[in-house]
Image (spheres, rainbow, N blue to C red):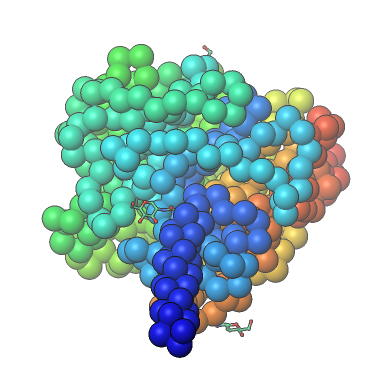
Length: 432
Ligand SMILES: *[C@@H]1O[C@H](CO)[C@@H](O)[C@H](O)[C@H]1NC(C)=O
Ligand SMILES: *[C@@H]1O[C@H](CO)[C@@H](O)[C@H](O)[C@H]1NC(C)=O
Ligand SMILES: *[C@@H]1O[C@H](CO)[C@@H](O)[C@H](O)[C@H]1NC(C)=O
Ligand SMILES: *[C@@H]1O[C@H](CO)[C@@H](O)[C@H](O)[C@H]1NC(C)=O
Ligand SMILES: *[C@@H]1O[C@H](CO)[C@@H](O)[C@H](O)[C@H]1NC(C)=O
């Protein structure tokens, strides 16, 4: 009897532990249930129709609501392998909104700090650059992966073989913007993360384009570039209401030297005072001195940016957080709005709770910006393991900023009114 009891006990222990291991593995998700969500960073996102699609990046999560789950290659971080979407037709709250997971083939190489090349008219986007798990160089087979949305929050992945794909340097952190039938990727950084053969880091100069119709990459940097140097971790925003074709504004980022190591040498950096713009069709470059509460802490990179347009053709760009690479590896907590056409900066309420970098922002509704993920700086991966307080205080890492009443919120309002400038900016225009 004793023997069989002992056997049973051992057997049930064995079963219990096996069961735990299996269920832990099953519980690691691209979008864990809210109580198990800890952090999401390095993802890219876009709004297509009524849905926000979130691609790639890394996720930190718990399996029991308390302890962090293990990850295979970046300490406790796991690669986000599938496509996520959020339904924006109804109002929701960050702590309970459902995030849908859509299967992505492994060949599409889930990746972090990648560019999304978005052709909104067709409801499609491609993944460009970034780094994949285990530092496998992305796109070496010359195959390009495209996601086609279905208008219902889902969609499917397919592949294409575009022209000149293999000739393009794989980079992370390019300032990317998609306009009409072309995507523009300015600068970026090649490193041991994007290419295991890369020794040290290499800033990439100029700009490349992807032509959605011709299915071709173009690098005409030798003939024309919107910048003389390089840009990493900056942001590009399209201003459709300005000039004949609309203008692209380049904001922030680092400007690293083109000679390989050591690239973290300081150069003249893109500050937020002298703003660079270009017309991608006429290939004219412009600059404009901005006034007001100009964001400090230059260079500032990997902040988030998104904009809303006013009925009179103006546009306001929100920037929030980011980090300074020459600083203490800490993120910024401040946020600003650049108002156009006035080129006037207004400091708006700081990010709630804590500083944030490597988050991504998308304009949603008529007057809101959705901020996805991010982390405070200075949190080292090895320390994260020891401290469950690294959990994002923003539920599921989702925050909303209302561009009119200038408030950070944790509720998305699907029935917001048309975008109107906040009073502080209205008054500035009124007073000339
Ligand atoms: C993504 O796939 C990799 C490789 O199979 C795996 O190690 C990782 O845990 C997966 N991520 C998630 C969130 O399931
Ligand atoms: C584009 O061309 C320039 C100039 O030849 C080169 O330095 C840069 O690396 C190229 N960009 C990419 C992404 O391949
Ligand atoms: C985008 O398309 C509009 C409408 O066809 C056109 O007027 C504009 O010049 C285009 N702008 C760019 C940057 O391609
Ligand atoms: C602003 O930057 C441009 C280069 O992008 C430069 O040519 C111009 O002189 C600068 N303006 C001022 C006032 O510093
Ligand atoms: C761990 O959490 C405590 C309490 O919030 C905090 O003071 C400390 O800085 C955290 N440590 C790390 C390494 O994040």
